[in-house]
Length: 159
Length: 299
Image (cartoon, rainbow over all chains, first blue to last red; front, side):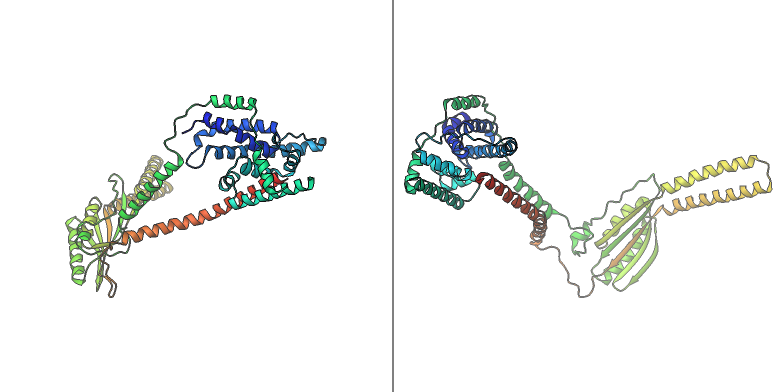
């Protein structure tokens, strides 16, 4: 059985990449990734390799952490918008992406981005990605197709 | 740009964790202790407990003795030689009123007649007597008075006369009544003593007479209670099987399985009654949660 340190070493990039695309903010993704691994260490005894790979398990945890973040962020934004208009800063999804694709990705919703991250960036198969998302594989594929279609449209409009 | 190109470009993009994060995670991983692997995970526990519980339930159901009050007629030596009767609790130091009813079934009218004779013999041999006897075709009702100290023995012997189809034991504690009477008598005695010390006027004499009568009445009541309760009342009902009634020759080999299925059915019914609402609540909660997450991610 792999140790936690080994799993962390092997899947850090995946978890970070997933969170970076999911949140659209690398700084936030960094914090969330660290929180994910802290939580993973606490829950490592619950990890069962027979039920899935460490990568899937870590992605599930990362998703929970990210959802918590989105919820708190939503509450925070609601409070702050009452006081002053919110100004949001963006970071790049990846260094090698064209600016058009970057902005097209930015235009996607977080839900669409996460399915792209899982299926394309992490190269998970439909059933594993669906398990992370808590939906059916068909639904997962539909979401991916919809997201890709949106990206395609946005890029064609930009061209 | 086609979807294929989009996919190719996205696949080409690699996101690497920054060194600071790598260091942070490395530090987190350093804190890892190797906790002993849990031997009893919930899955293993369930895998162990479920068959054990099922085995216990099956054993209880299959080995459960036939209830004596069930109207299940049993013939044969086994039922007669090993009667199962209630354990009669006896507390010899207390005055208690015992009442017991025993219903027996015998094969035919000859057996019925023999049983009645035998029952009377048992009662007299134990120092008791028959308070009443009614015998008719197919049934007999006897009320036997048996010394309280020998009621267990009487019950055991009477139970051997046929197959038990019903029994009942009533025990009424009389000690409290007797104690109350004794206390009242002591109080009345004190009053009597005080009255006797007074000048014996007509009114005082009348009061003394009343008190004396009351004390005597209480003494009689106590004596009657104690005397009556020396004997237990055993009502014995002996009957032959009703004509045309199907004769059951004990349980068949599949009886246990039938009982087990009955209990499993009852269990399933309860599980459905409790499980379905819980499952519905769980499904609704899950759907609401999913909807909220979708709304959060698509906003």
